[in-house]
Image 1 (cartoon, helix red, strand yellow):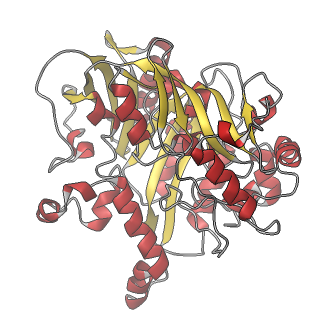
Image 2 (image 1 turned 45 degrees about the horizontal axis):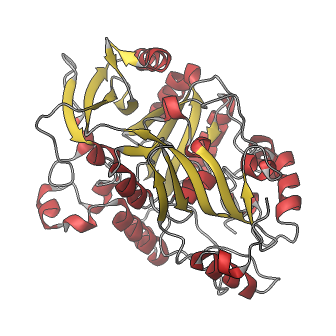
Length: 458
């Protein structure tokens, strides 16, 4: 179904987007004009104006009866969750950071603690409108004439187009989420527990609706097992002086329990950007008391990182110490559960970064996705690590991680730096299928190629 609608039938936001596309010279690459981003790879500078997405940032309709939401592509999950929780509903997967957009999570993949039962955000999309390289907005569904674009859009990172509207599934929630932090002294035991929770959706007789984990060392790791709850009780607040990831740690004699409102649970990692706020001193109690609460959020920390990238302040500080620039290692990888303990041991022995985040996931169905070929029926564990290491050969640690992930039959997300050759990249990210999609939906190459965006920083 082509949405070549008369101008009056388009939303104002769609018309602005189409007008801005038409204004970009044909020989210039098309990209978004965004003030914020959750990507961690550099982009080539350009003076060409980007696409105007104003007016494409809202929630259009929440259908309580059908448990669906119709949402603009540039709507943030913060705004989406605020609208759906009013009706006792939430998206099936809510990525951890408030300013991630729905369109961004679908084209760039996303994950959270419901992914062991609900998969990835794109799997709960029923249909979406996409601006293609031809300058038209088309509607893609699993079974219409643009089904190929529907399957190929996830992990395309704007190289095939941008979502302007998405229709997604929702699920009911309770007022609270009850948490258990269970300690493991052995990584094999932790992985066995993940397998059991994924298979049974419970642990020691209690239902599990959400699961993620944190590894501090080979003998100190935790799973946070959580469930929807309508029980009243004292709730914790990790938006102030308390820090969520520190609340997880205990001696292991009994699970540590906690209770959060559903809203606070969904954004429990955002206040301190998981644990990355410590790099800015925001976890120092004296600094934290002075740090404005409105700036205790991932978007504020990201701006500090972007400022550092522009000014090279950290590199200059290292140079004053006589050191080369530190290597940024900001990555998420999916490892088959059967190899996860092996990968974690290798990582802890090789890369001086801790803590490490864990999040199990499975595809929701037998449907596969061209550009991120996870195997249906297999459990993976997303392993996230976000820091820097002493500089050696540029990219040395990241390249070693890529090799180890490949050896263990895993996959790496593309939101950060990648170092693959073109042949490696095409083999891992559906190169043959992508070539067909690119020729079909962006025949003039108005959007950058996925390899150029992910590896060459185009």
